[in-house]
Length: 114
Length: 117
Image (cartoon, rainbow over all chains, first blue to last red; front, side):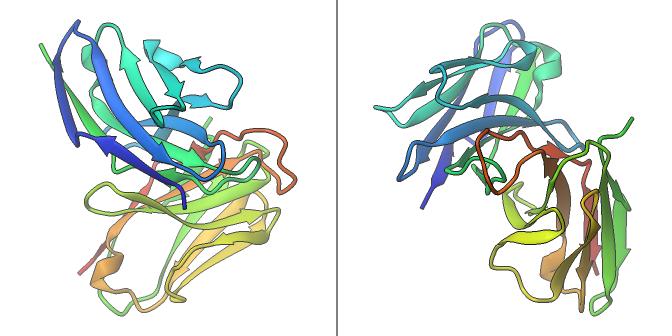
């Protein structure tokens, strides 16, 4: 069965610093991977997705993630944190195309210090 | 224009009551979903409908019954509410079909916070 583990339920960085949010997955077949962001009291918004076309995926708001099959990882990074990046971030995996059963990690709360 | 909308945004009710949450999408998508987010922010899929047909049905108590009158709407009805049903319920939609062929993006609604007293 597929699963996702996000290391660190809470990450805190200074404004302008590198953001690194970790995600490791488990899947019996080549997975499709996603990062979603949830701002306070809002729904989830897609940041980026890995669909096997390229291992380095660029998303919105300056975020990117790299798929590393050997490490079963899909970590999310941003070179320079902005105050507006403060939110909850979710990594998700699915093994199916089309209508998907997304399996989410437990989420990582990102706090940005001024 | 709101892509995926849910009503109500907040719902406070007593144990044992029956309540419904409505979801509508104006994206022209074929597939809609219900997710439950618990107090620890863990998100889990409950149901998915494709063109009014149930395609994903996770291990959910049968007190929860989704209803899709048309492909733009997916409502969630909950009977005999329990304390453990307190959560935020998210509706989502995607273009997807059961034939696959592309990797969908799911678009989420703003959520409905259900509190059972």
